[in-house]
Image (cartoon, rainbow, N blue to C red; front, side, top):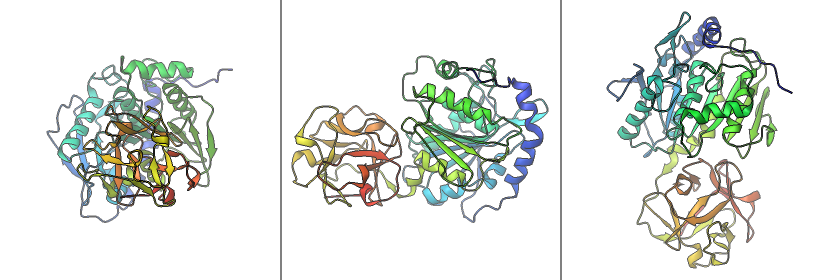
Length: 440
């Protein structure tokens, strides 16, 4: 049976934002930031800027050698410096070494100012212009200026910024790898299609039509919404879930449901491509304290400060599990694509010797790469012919973990196993002995 949903166009959706967003922003402006010598600075001349946006940038004192990039966007009637001060993204950047871009919006609608464009024909399509093109220019500037990692570019935002988050994921899936919208609406909701009753297929088609012909991987989504949001209905969270599970070809039935904190309900779809957080009793005032850290972990940016790019020329060697004392091994010295790797007694043979390349590959036999068969928790780790994809690029971290450039997840011995034959998978990094490795 179809659910009945309130239809909202540009005017209706934006008009109700005024009072509540101003109230929420007052909270953003009164939070005291943590002390740091690093400061928010405005950047001019960052590149093509059809949206006429201003760019504010936060670079931590200790930036990672190849940092990730996070775009963090305020709500209507908001200011980039206020969003910087009132959220935890900058303090998390201090901890993990990534760079944060805070765009300043300037569009007006129905008496509201400083909204991000998520309704014009230009904003709703790849390469169309307006705010998305300006934001992509900011990202490219940071990637070049700070030797950023193009495989770790993410977006997040509140209200209008949440809407732009999903807009960027739809129009530039080749740039943004994941997004975390707080109190937003699905992509295309404020465009001609409206926010009314749609099937998951219809919502998904809007995303696919934003960049016709694109066949690459789609960004992961972590969506948040309060049940008492009187500005943007809580029902919008399910619309976002319907849209992005369809985009990823997933069931609309969650694979798991849990409660990470009191009053929070988390639903996980597929192997983690889509997550939805229901915050009981929360209004239009997200993210609250502690929520940003969940997004940073979802992005994999929490490994940034301890990350080192593998250095070619370090030689070929074994990767030994700290918890097991056994080596990363290709079963039976097989060479077929799709052979899943395992733990096995170290023997120094060719099927246990891994070479690091300048692309971050871990090669065995000289022409086969360590390859992630997916990007979510539980994805199998296998060998495959090297093709340069992000699922074959790895980071060897100072704490002994090895993270996938595409997923941000760790190489993990399944079930914390230590026995011969234990399979290896991707899993959320937790620093356990079954996720730490030494090279020899």
